[in-house]
Image (cartoon, rainbow, N blue to C red; front, side):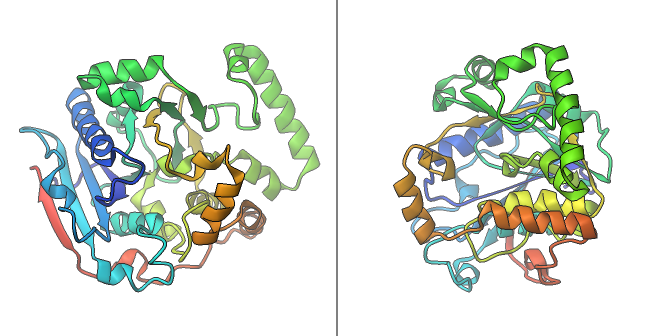
Length: 347
């Protein structure tokens, strides 16, 4: 194994076909990482935390592709067993604790920098080229736009063709644009008029700074939309914020809580250029699938209670004002004191 990989990529999943075509989506993701590191070589550790694997399904290590010969990727599986999962209060209704699982990966990551992301993404060429240049800095957290693309991207043969298909078939984009942190819910075409967008951003930045206290202004600038799909910072900074808060709740907004803690503790936000994006393979099973079905959303929340945004926002403002973290995790967050089964593939 590389003793000092530059980047650790941390994801979590289980072999339960969540969202449909899970193995196909994950295979596309893993092959995409292999392809991009061949195109833009640098040392990457890919960590898949397999949380509470179903007893009637094989482990993912037996079905997902391993790094090709000569790859600069080391693939590591960390298996968190059902027995540990069952210690949580909501274990019956939440088969996977996404952010706690990512913490398991963060504390065990060997990389200087750690990217927490998800298993249904393809990374753009510009994004991986940027990562390969090794210009990341501690004291920053990095955010990238998520571009949703049709699931038919998986039917396209060859990674290069998949990326080309993704570029040409973006359904919508989630996340703030670099240099336009204070523009909210404006149509995409406005960004095509760069001077107009810049002037509008400066105007709203000035207006908001006059209307709100510093901590409110800071919260407004955070790029929290779809941040669970791409949050990157130095491992030392992940340790500084104690990873994600480990709550026995559905993971909604917990990804944003990581950004809030980072900003409150003086870690700066860096939003990457729009073409340094990820392409998300759309699937209907998830929080955003209830946009057109509010009653089903209420039923979902009943079974899987989670935090409301107001609680995160109001507490975040207090944290930024007082320059403190959440303080919710135990010293052994990420189950740092537990030894899990691990399987490693690659050099």
